[in-house]
Length: 63
Image 1 (cartoon, helix red, strand yellow):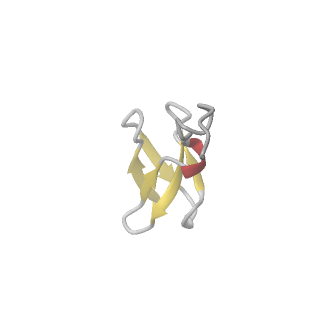
Image 2: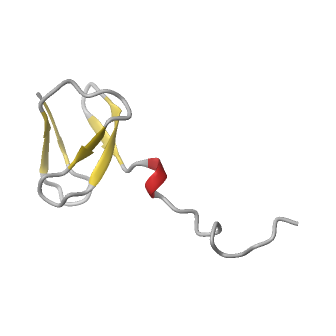
């Protein structure tokens, strides 16, 4: 079992099975979802696809 701390609420996140890089993990305390980025020690980060580029929806032309 691997343990780490939630990036959102500082709660304890325990992963029972051996995680893999890229696996999604959810915090039981605040329901935030993270991605496994390192295995030893277990490190989580916010999933890349959850970030939105502020310029994507701004209507700017690339010309």
